[in-house]
Length: 245
Image (tube, rainbow, N blue to C red; front, side, top):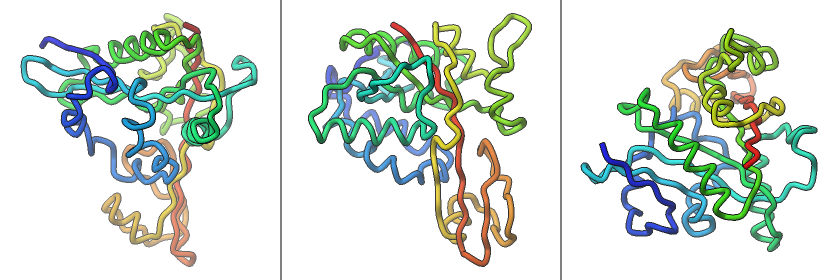
């Protein structure tokens, strides 16, 4: 497989190929309403920060890396906002509307086509995102990383667990640390999904008929169900990682 990697700004002719990577997240993961301020606007507002990898032999998209520029006046090592992914989307939107000059870049998503996972594409996409961030004149890339193994332990413990070789136990955190990233802190309320019980039944094919915590496949923690209130809420934690470029 021969890959060509470029931004949406560099290859506007690739526009139709992006749809080949749509619909790959679990349905409930696409219900964070803050995402509406990014998805649908990314190619108009931030095309130079959206990176696509295309298999030129097949003419198909195989992976993507999305990011946004934003302003941050604090010291990254002292901690990044608890609202994680949601904060990055909102802050970049506010900065764009106000005309504020961004100071850093936040990753939002790295997606590899399921049939091609395990071949090192995530490493290549992170490297491409780092390189693209530096090429735009930024020295700091942050990422609210989704630690896929956190569903088995509390996030505050799991985020800092290491293997015997000193690398994180979590595979996604390990990719970032190997690339030069440093774990900063946990964003406990990084994403929030709220819906009626009918919504959650549609999103997950689960009954949602009993109040209390509900285990949903691919969620990093329980979804909190309130039958009397006809609502269920999922709050996802992420782990902030900082890449100094």
